[in-house]
Image (tube, rainbow, N blue to C red; front, side, top):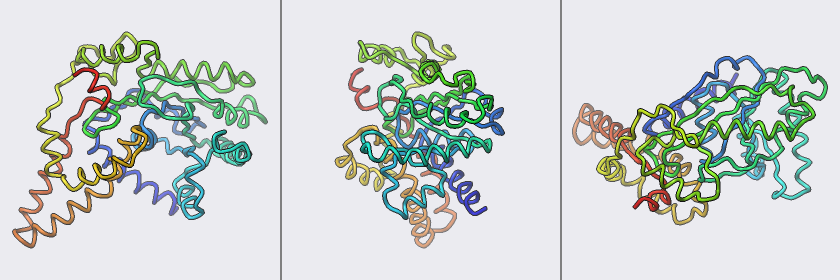
Length: 338
């Protein structure tokens, strides 16, 4: 009961924070038919922790998450993560001796799925800002094989979800989650290669997948065409009548001025971040913790210096500015079109 209550409250908090962090979050497709069915959710991985948070909060399937085993090293942290429905997964780069730990994790995944639960996995095995689907690892097929081993007719569903971002690294941009057609796992029992191929094909149709060859020119052409990049799929655009509204520089500038402490904290941390894929996640975490404290502090100070009514009005204005913040391009992509 406590675990369910904790995760429910955490979900509401994170969902609210995500709503403020992104200018728009759109979900395309229907996830409700899978609420009471055993489902292995697979998704592309472009934006570190934000990928998992968006799926967990805006698609209400309450999945368990497979996460890098390295974050479970501390026993206390490991207990907290387990309480948050996270399951460790070991990679070859973690050392061949640790791979055996996956047997226990995959057994837990099998148990969850057998009880009509949900598992979320990012089968690319790593993340990247490039707008393309990378080769899928076979880890998720091991979970499928283990689940179907004693009952090949078990109705396990693989649900592909495509994640698309207007600007992965910046707040005030749009995110789109597109739910694809379910894949029946039992149709691929014993044929792991075909399952990997079909899953990759499904993900390629649910997000922008640009070939490595001539990548920069392709992305430059899209960015200069004034279309919503989250809805680009190869040579086509979903809802092609929609044109991208220009980002207002003054909105982003006003956001930075009125939330100066957070912007300064980010600039201090930015120098220490080696992987640009984590920019968006770190900015979100700074806001998740810092903005409520900042608003509370201002509310207390303004209430004492002026009045509670004026303090509330100031907080409301700050909230509106936070939501109005607007960005359209990643750092490298913005350089391409200048």
